[in-house]
Image (tube, rainbow over all chains, first blue to last red; front, side, top):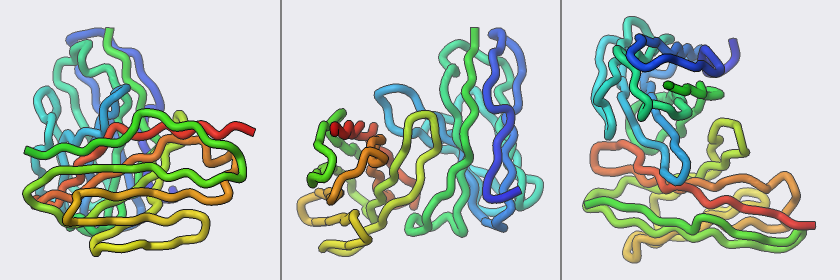
Length: 114
Length: 109
């Protein structure tokens, strides 16, 4: 593993199904983030974590949950998917939460909810 | 409230210079980032400004005026590979990034 990885690369999901997007980093970064990116809109923060064991809500957290059991992994779960959650999801990490730290992004997961 | 604005699309010629502007409004400011994002790929870091002035890094430079809530990214000697979206984002008082929608830059030969 080099940097930050996400799985799956893409997924088509029926509405109402549960889905977990996986994210793993090997940079020993303390802070991790989940964003969604929709056409015509900027990246929007869903949830973040500033260290293992702690998480926080971002701008658009409804319908999503996260956990941070260890430093490397930060999965995002959609408990019951809805079509408005169709988006490209990016996981990112930075050394610390403080805003001057460069964020490194995973390759993204393209999710379609039908 | 907070907001950030940048042009949706710009076109420039290979070898030329282009300036991409970004304006923002916020009550708490802790720096401004520029990222590059090629189509279908993840954003990658270009620059960070926290003090007023120009930061130069090779063909790319970034400028910040905190009093005016204004930044620009200057790309010199444009190459075809510079065709991408350029995202500006500022860090708010909670140290979270607030992102613009991105400027799609099209380079023509």
